[in-house]
Length: 392
Image (cartoon, rainbow, N blue to C red; front, side):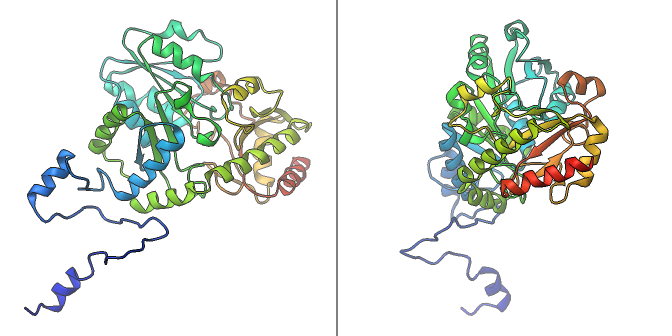
């Protein structure tokens, strides 16, 4: 039967033609929903009796490819992808606690995470205690209702490195789980799950992507924990775009190469800045002078320490403003981990929501600058800092 032009335009070409060969790269399944030929098949997919997809908020072939990469490189059993790092963090936390529970969190965290713990969880009647895991005796903060301990592998912005195996043992002795934000390290440098952590979260916007062109988040854990997190994510709906998922898969192909180069450049820049008279302190765990170097050597894989470092300038806030203003190719960017070197001012960006007292307690001064060391020639980077530091 002959059909109208409009009907043919709507329905023709909606199936992939059969082929004995396959696409060299992962196809982008850019659809919000999937179609079925009958109700029985739909029921079987929902029941898990047949492999298939229903709705992209629940899953998508691109997400499955992405999850396969992530849980394997992190040593987990399953993973989930979200639209941002904060989505990954919040879904992980909310899936594990209920009203009346208690959480222990490190006092030096990414500002968004800190704000979520400080203000948002109050609405759920969840108590949070901020502690200094480096100085405080962690055992004294546990309560009978403590469900989680939340830390970062490399803290933002002071580059502190915590003893994950020790913290995990203490938490497990008190029947609590450990969530580790592994954004600054990635699995190339550290695998927290293999060190005793229960859940690993990422802002995949950063190193996992590495090209400053998507926002995304990843969670990795065991199958049962991921089932809980996935259920929470389906309800809240912070869904990643399939195209962003595809871009992230593309980026992960070069993750190790990029992170190693970032790390090599960061170590050389940190050594240079450590000896500069206008720099009071350099925060980088790869330096032998760092109080975290021994712990980093213990828990990091290989001799790599990441591409992030921070510096405290002798001239404080005035010096920070001047350096940002005078730098040539290195720009003020309120994010990190792109291919080009960028600088951030934590007191005005990532930790802007901190009060003066909280900044002081966390050790974040007005002269502190965070540097995301890129993939440029290291000689060019050092030369730019040398010229700029002479001007301020």
